[in-house]
Amino acid sequence: GAVVSQHPSWVICKSGTSVKIECRSLDFQATTMFWYRQFPKQSLMLMATSNEGSKATYEQGVEKDKFLINHASLTLSTLTVTSAHPEDSSFYICSARDSGGKSYEQYFGPGTRLTVT
Amino acid sequence: AQSVTQLDSQVPVFEEAPVELRCNYSSSVSVYLFWYVQYPNQGLQLLLKYLSGSTLVESINGFEAEFNKSQTSFHLRKPSVHISDTAEYFCAVTPVSGTYKYIFGTGTRLKVLA
Image (cartoon, rainbow over all chains, first blue to last red):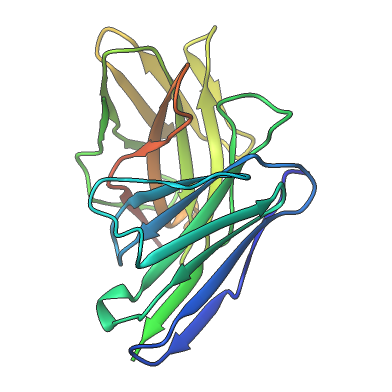
């Protein structure tokens, strides 16, 4: 149980275009999901907390107009990178908190590698 | 606020040798502690966690970690490593009550040599 999927697993896009990444909790409901960014050989940096039915909470320094987050249902959160640039190339990982589970538990998706050319 | 420090960015070790990956944290509130493993181009997999109780926690694949409150440490150990243990290891904490946010260390790349 407690599986989180991400789609796509990798994507290449041209500079200036937008890319949408999906994060789904497959066998549990998640009122809260988290989006992380990981640069090569570096740690995960929390970008934002996604709350079902309300606006996402962004970490300091993260442009909310560039990284649009929508959490429209209890099993799906999406991250849209708008007007992508090469510096947005990174590994994006989501995690989900089981609404019916223990407060501390997060389950991580397999990640999405974004390359902007 | 919380912070996590993993002093060793890379740890090379020969197969069947013991290894210790260090993790220290700083927090003004009580935290839960975790170790995650990441294989190349994959997401994070939970290795083990400390919530409360016995300070020594074990995973199913031979890793163990010991919570030391006085030294604010949660070092990861394995008595005999395998080639397949080669991966990136992240230490993380989250407040016992509050934001549910995880704070990760910078990671330690374990490379097991034949």
